[in-house]
Image 1 (cartoon, rainbow, N blue to C red):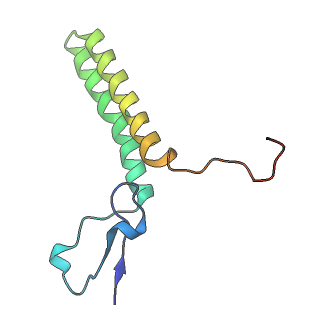
Image 2 (image 1 turned 45 degrees about the horizontal axis):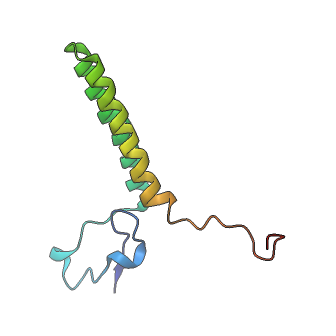
Length: 98
């Protein structure tokens, strides 16, 4: 009996197939890709926002704004690279293009 699970990240279901009954102590940490995406987006919004708040309260509003912008942009790049870039966003074949 096997237990197919999805690896953390975007490698898909085949990356984390394990024999759960054979070696349960060596099973890699796995989670659904949708859960990982939600955690990345939440962390990319919450962590820079909280850092911005505390830096602003400490009198470093410019640094806080920079930390928020870099954190939010980093989250956007990670989401693009991990979940959007692998999508095949081409139209149907046989169109009017040459």
